[in-house]
Figure 1 (cartoon, helix red, strand yellow):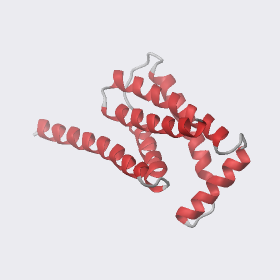
Figure 2: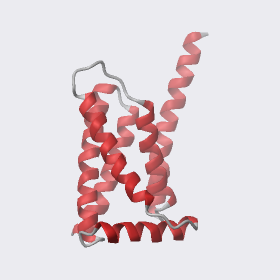
Figure 3: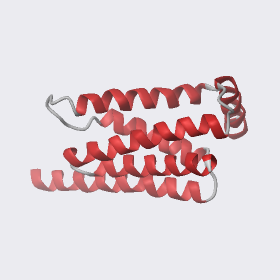
Length: 154
């Protein structure tokens, strides 16, 4: 059950983040909040189901997987995952703080990068296909916005 929850949580997180990249701000921040909650569930269950509650095992397994996919043995990806959780938590606190609001392109870019790496590069089979779909959706939305803005300015 915890393996299923780990995988389902990351699929939900990636889906919510992708939705958040294409929605207007007020709705996007709800999607991003849902995505962060699902991501935290993913992290907790991954530690339980795959790493026996051990950061050292998680770090070693991340290094092994990175070596297998890239030829470079590094556990840095685990730290990048922690950074993503921290960045999203800070960004969401800012979004809900009442200050002037807008999406931050660099946060979207960080999430986009993580979906690319986690689902497309390190995933396999259906995960890779779903990852590509999740990357195409915001790219198409961005191109549509760009096209509308260039048509509106001419």
